[in-house]
Length: 221
Image 1 (cartoon, helix red, strand yellow):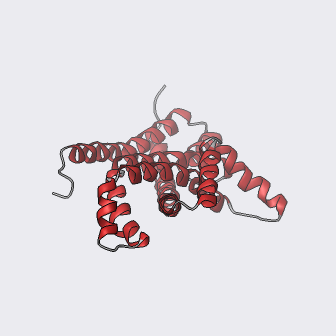
Image 2 (cartoon, one colour):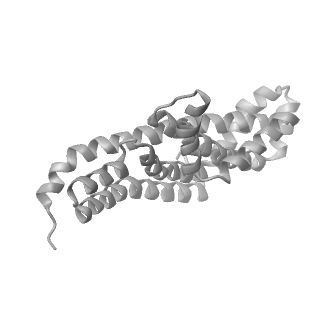
Image 3 (tube, rainbow, N blue to C red):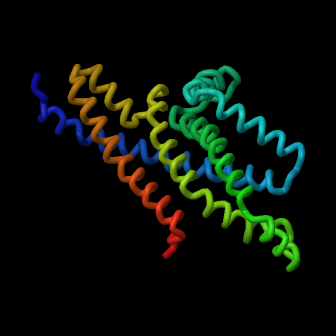
């Protein structure tokens, strides 16, 4: 068996567009998931009973149902209820739903790691709950949570391959399309593997470096 390198070169423009879609879906989902997590962390810090229970139910539901099932529900079941969404919108909604739950747990752990003495000091100088949250809790919780946040960001980027199931033209969808049309299975799988390595390996190395710097107290130096 010989690789058809000419065919691979001919598919590169399509794969570059697919990489763009993958990054677009992933980065939007990361941003919206982080927003959901910050809102949920705020609820947990303010200790509003009913909202706390609602956040707990959301986190358990999101983390204990597969992303593919969530995606199918949004894309196929919601139209039956009169809510029609595109494949791209369904991808963002479901990845935000899942990612928000994971990042909520990350920030919750970060919030719990903030020393109680700092909260008492903030209250002693007259800071309100909102000011404590903005100036003391969230900045420190965010810094303490950085390695876990970055790990979950990479996880969400990898999960973009699932959205090929609703015809979002990201890298896996493009790979399957070329295999179905031209039967160039080995060539397309090689391209897919190479793209994944080039996308995710630098991010993993960056995460490892960040963790080492935090362990040695060098972050920001």
